[in-house]
Image (cartoon, rainbow, N blue to C red; front, side):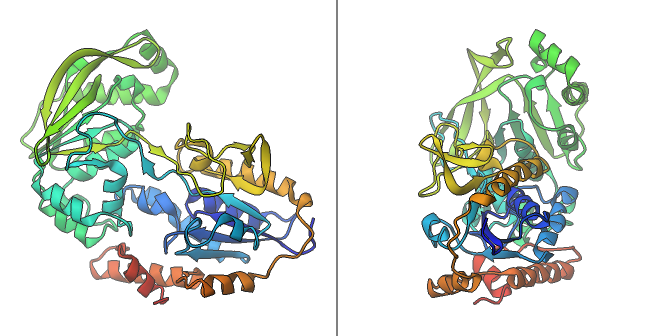
Length: 453
């Protein structure tokens, strides 16, 4: 092991990256310094830009992650995109080890006719819009939402539930959140009255959690509609219900909704089970969704029946999962959309790639909750530390040399002080409206707040 502190670059500042940085810095056996590098000017990844803004308690984990930057030896290097602004091979000149934790941010497609019609969008893009992501397509959603009357959300996971809830809530139910002001302005003009949620399997196979599910039945101005005939349970479903209390709770919630009588609320959320979209139809925009009835196959899956029905809708949101992307010069499993690894060590050509590690969704796929990433990142860091004795003895360029390289490349780097300035600016902006925070969306505004331009 080298005599100097080990220098580690963590690529991505979401939960996995922050947990990895924390695990590296709190251990006492090996001196370490950590640079957490992110392509955005702000940290925390999907905690900031993926968790629904009205789930304030979950988003508050940002405060816990933020404390990692208070620890000596940990730096934020924001607004630097690895693979674009600096290559992995160039990074390796400055660091002993690299931990890839950049997640799985791209959406999965449905693969059906009409999917590219105007008005057919990915949940990842809609979530980015209402969370204030710098790359959000504001123009598209600020055009589509006020002009839509009915929406179809494809998927029955928590992201699908989040999207449905945001579209169904009144602005008054959201005004306490840190959503950018443009989101409130657009939602005030929404004409959406009906939201149809499609699940290709039955209630026992849905992947949402009970807390998120129940919220759909507690909205101020939206009724929930469930067709009792779609509450089908085969032997495999009953076995899962009997063995899993969370699934049993979910099923009971849906069964109770099926017994409800509708009130006079102005919006309706229709939950459709055993239903999958097979075609989107339209003219200059999606107008209809052709839906096929499915049936359970006895093994936890479903098969098509050939029987279809049509839902009129001018907004379709697909929420059928995330997928990871390859990074130049880093091994990638294109079948599973992850970086191949063995105990967190990146694998290439049947052997570990020296000094490269992986954690989080880009390691295991988009599974688990925020807390899952802590155990995952800690396991990867354990492998990295176990390899420390094999670090090359040759000295690395200094931290200052790395900073000089970034400066000479003309990059507007947001460091710890810059992030703190952004944080303060968002809190001050929120205070004007009586909120804890208002998200600053524009990259240029974020950089101005960070005082790097």
